[in-house]
Image 1: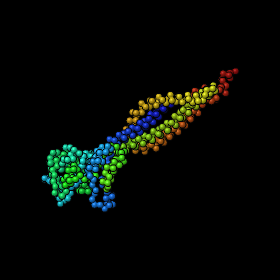
Image 2: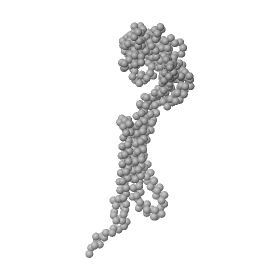
Image 3: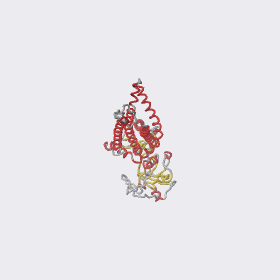
Image 4: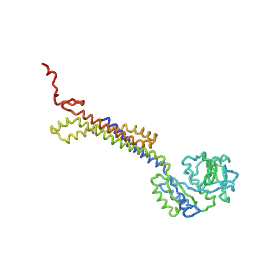
Length: 411
């Protein structure tokens, strides 16, 4: 019985530790990765309203929303056409064949928060990213193919003209990045090597705007994905009517990709824990019943001598606790290293595959419980002391055998 207690306690405690560990890992991953909330144009309402021009929102309002303690960082989203001047040539075709050197410029607050940089698809090869410290500077990031073709390095200068070609501004190359794609943008037919990244304020100034910087949208990185509803209320309060024509959506795809396997492991561990606990409880109950049945004669003698029934029950309970307490203590020492291996195996094998195998595990445990019950009942039957035979359990034979002693047959 002690070995059975240790085995079952170890497995149940291991399931509890795996479940608790995965829950803490999910929470830590959520806080580490956060979640990106996108404020973008509501295309459905735009089409339904018959509007031809997308709404814009002031950078001042975005800054107010971004000051929330719920926000870890935020970025602007704007774009416009620009023309390369000063003899710098595109690596691909111009977006407009009638305009030489015409390409797309993206306006940002912090280039590090752009989705493609965040995912690792784009990589900054040399130089520095654009940050909010460059708000009042004409900094620019260029793709490595454009830098190679025009022999540009960080610190060099590029002259850009606005969408109409009427205004020009000089930009300083802050860094060179790599985009592995070689396919033109399906919407604007811009070659990836010709993409320019500048600060939103510089792009607005190049376009001739004199008031607050107008944006197409923004991206906010929350410290905790669970605070999305609270953040949404904060944004509505700060922006008010300025949010008309915009939607606020959370993009927690990266978080789900990371925490999905952890959630599956937690679910599998919980189910296995309950199955093992129930089957183990059934086996332990049968073992205790067998132990009581084997000592039935002892209890009968004690009751005949006037012992109280509740004392016998208390004695049996104390004996069970005396066996269970050391077993649980020993299992607590064994469970942690076994749990670490089991958790790694679940993540390596795939929690989905483990979950698919749970019905088979349940069937095996149920069959084991039934088999244990049958074996224990059979053993209990053999261990009942009778008057006509000596049992294998070592019970004393109380009644003399009916067969005559061979010594008494002598003449």
